[in-house]
Amino acid sequence: MDNTMSEHGLKSLAGSIQSVASPFRNYLNELHEQYRSLQEGKLADYIPELAAANPEWFGICAITHEGQVFEVGHCDRLFTLQSIAKAFVYGLALEDKGRDYVTSKVGVEPTGEAFNSIILDEHTNRPYNPMVNAGAIATTDLIQGSGATERLQRILDMFERYTGRPLDINVPIFLSERSTGNRNRAMAYLMLNFGMISDRIEETLDLYFQQCSILINAHDLAVMGATLANGGINPITGERAIQRRYVQDVISVMLTCGMYDSSGEWSYRVGIPAKCSISGGISAVVPGKLGIGTFSPLLDTKGKSIRGIKVCEDLSRDFGLHLFNADATDKNLDEWIAGSDSIDDWG
Image 1 (cartoon, one colour):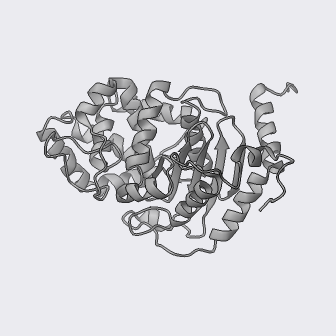
Image 2 (tube, rainbow, N blue to C red; image 1 turned 45 degrees about the vertical axis):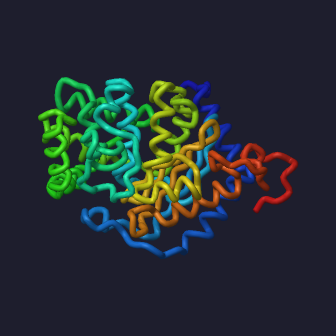
Image 3 (cartoon, helix red, strand yellow; image 1 turned 120 degrees about the horizontal axis):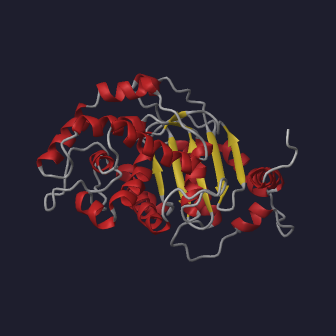
């Protein structure tokens, strides 16, 4: 065996040592301890597999744009990507078709409606944005490939660039999504009527259901967020996941539309681009700084992870991460991550 440690291995080891030594890890541990006893909310139940989740599962992971990893709790617990896939598939559609063509098929306006509403912009006949189901189906339809297999593989390859590892699809959940997906079929046929998608309806819907059924964990969500925070380059592997010019498009729509029909309140209170899912995940982006991944399957009435929201709210407030924050903060994130000697308060 070659005993020479690779550059990647050295970087990972340095990140691990840094995470142990840093007060930021201690801060995340305290957040986890504070909110793990929170029992508010309920599990998603429209798919039996989602309803079988353990309400005690709770993980927090933060990864800097330089690849330092900080995690606590159930960060390796697998769950399905669900709606979080929408943001990243939107990025792939932009690469495949370009900004002008994509925006001719899918808008970028918040709706104020539930994510599964059967509604199109009455002036343009486009779905309002790529973070609602109708918009996500339309962007999925734009993914290039000679057939269903090639198109699916391109999506899986894209997510592998973001996460740095091969990903699998949960077949039972995919089949459940497909068998209960008539509302999404109604959206697809409505968009076909207005020329917003092609006539390969079932192929595109299967692709949409499959991307929702990809298995990931909180660590993956943090790497995905950190990749966007790092201008599209995965900070762990060094591989580019998305062209830099489209990172702005993706995180802009995440900020304004990524948290279902409470996206406006999220932007106002938290101010971090993020995408949530009914499986209990949140992937958030602090541009130029870090990615955040949380997992807790207990949801509020609008389908967002209650513990995950609390964690993001606290991080934004305590470290001044709101994109429009103009005030000095009590805690300097860079110093907390680095474990600066100037930090006296480790709580």
